[in-house]
Image 1 (cartoon, rainbow over the protein chains, first blue to last red):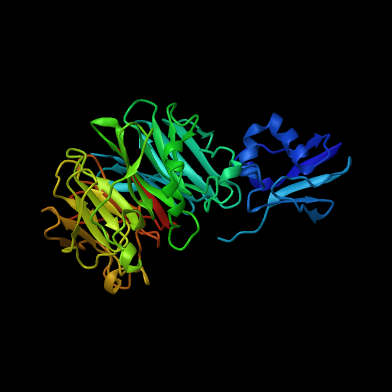
Image 2: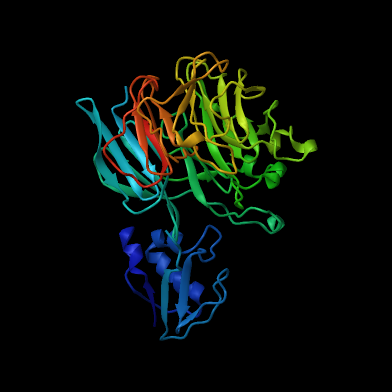
Length: 89
Length: 360
């Protein structure tokens, strides 16, 4: 099972504990988490289902390439990190 | 008169209450988060957040209870034939929240120019598709050099909740008389001086910074436009320029007296290249004769090296027409109990103010 971990910055607004998922792509992994925590979806994805501009997702230490369709493949034991890309102010 | 004031800022929502004749901050909410819109309806308060990383959010609080997050307005899936749409089909920020005139109904004006309606007190929202699908919407220009147009104003006729006006930066005044099912652009008589000559007078070229209407005489509307002040006496169809505004004609905010059709307030600034108060003095301009003349009000306002700018939603008048408040980009907040004759500043150094709203 892969593990999806969310930035602690989200804890100010809602619960976002790590989740174990069985998934082949980043999109499937996130969708699996949002099934049980639907409120999280709008914090990570925009209205069209793409990654929000200032949210980053890393798998195996690298930023995912497909930020629109979230098609990057993941391995069964990958850690998927969802965190905020830097913005000022 | 309103005894409570909500002030949305770059770093949280501040509630002020009037006690023993003194306004003071009594509660703080969402400290650290940008508040883009606020609405008080009875004991219920709505607050829209514009989170830098995580998008636009909407929260509601009933009475003294806990804040609860509501579903934010969202755009439907973008169809294939909209691939060349210059504007994103994704909520940028909630810029204004207004009551819809019937129980449970709310309107939300947003960037990138979507108008959303709720009929269940914000629990769910639907895009006003008839306006979003107007072919002219693709000609709407972005706000202040940005990419996204924004609906800064939603005015509901107090006599008829289906009669709606929206003001768009930058795309004129749009009207619906059927609750949002159909729309047309209506503003004649404005001009936009930075546009090429052949486009200056086009209704869609007008940068409507903010609209206000007299609640008792809803046909009377005021507009703080990018390059001046305009007034309409026929519900926003025909506008004439108000040239008597002092000390300058540029600004963002306007407030209309709820009962007196000839009284309105503005917060003028040096025009758009600079966007600071004239001569470093914060003033409010008030007309009480329909715009034929203005008084420049400064009693209690900083008159030396003050560079406060007041955004579109940074000025408010209460239902009595006597209490006013405005907040600035420098975190200034001033309240008047006498229609603007004199102003006091609560004891607070606030973050930049985006919106002030009385709880009437």
